[in-house]
Image (cartoon, rainbow, N blue to C red; front, side):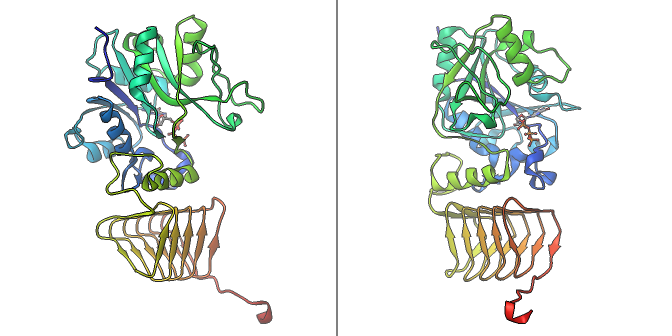
Length: 364
Ligand code: GTP
């Protein structure tokens, strides 16, 4: 009998430091950042569950205790969740090997492995089916991107065999990239990854398996896909979930132009658009405009402020008339009136930018 994705065990890689998302990740690991109203991982877990996954091993390292606080034994999510924590981060490969000790499935069973920072609409059941029908060692979800020069690329033969893992280059040979979701034959994890060592699956394990002639299969599915590793991608991911561009069973409410969480106060004269989310106890005052942004719990967007494609951290305050475009404001920071911040600027937690008096040329 052929196994299916029902009853599948999964390993979720959630131990990274999320350096590209600082300062948001100084206090909260990337997979726990509130995204469309719930911790990012809630969307991935709901998706995995909808494909029949019932048991998940979290491979944790950075701020591991926060994951246990957020997800406990998983029963609230219809899952059994267990935790395997690395004392020192072991890299993606070392983390998979370490977490595999907590799996209960037999050596020839498929194991789903997911990066904890990917939003994807791909068909996990079809990926598992492709893996089993070809008896592959590993089957990688590959997605097509317009500009593969920003990623390493993954060429395949016409029948789907991966031939190489190529580093970033200005002239990539294919538009296919590694989408960060794998199906491993369980025994391959134990035989191909040494225990207790720092190992990268992308740079070491996959290239070595290919070199040794193992079948590393590419499963190409180009439905919605986003790596939320950077601030602008994180904001986009949250907005896409709110807008329903990617459907998530974990979205707390109906998809639409905006999502206002319970306990938030939004003036009827404020404008919320583009998949904005307003967190619990946050406030958006009259005349403020918030587009495609994440307003975290307890934050205040004062009257006449304009916030576009930005993250406003928990308890932060944007004073009247301040303008933010493509900006990350850390928790409890304050942006004084008259400031106009743009283009990837990041304000560290607790920092206050004083009011910035607008001077007209006639004053000078
Ligand atoms: P950056 O520091 O911004 O690159 O983010 P990151 O730390 O998340 O690294 P990256 O995006 O390369 O990681 C891909 C996935 O693997 C993420 O879900 C990480 O949480 C996870 N990850 C990376 N390194 C480790 C590790 O050493 N241990 C564990 N358990 N997970 C890891």
